[in-house]
Length: 91
Image (cartoon, rainbow, N blue to C red; front, side):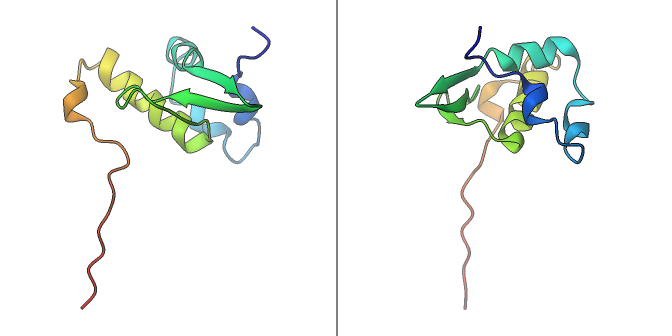
């Protein structure tokens, strides 16, 4: 698929390359299948919220960890919270 993103491209910068070293090829391939190109930008489908987000390196790593929790550790989706808003209370 020419419009599918190869994660190696995003993580080609030497400083962030270690981000993929923790994951095996099956996990990487599974998460690559969650990525689409929309209006010239790559987006990744969140496995928890079932919504598309920008395919930034931190979101891709988040989805790789979610994939591992769901598929290797059989962790239930309802127990995983992603990007919960923080409330700052100032006195």
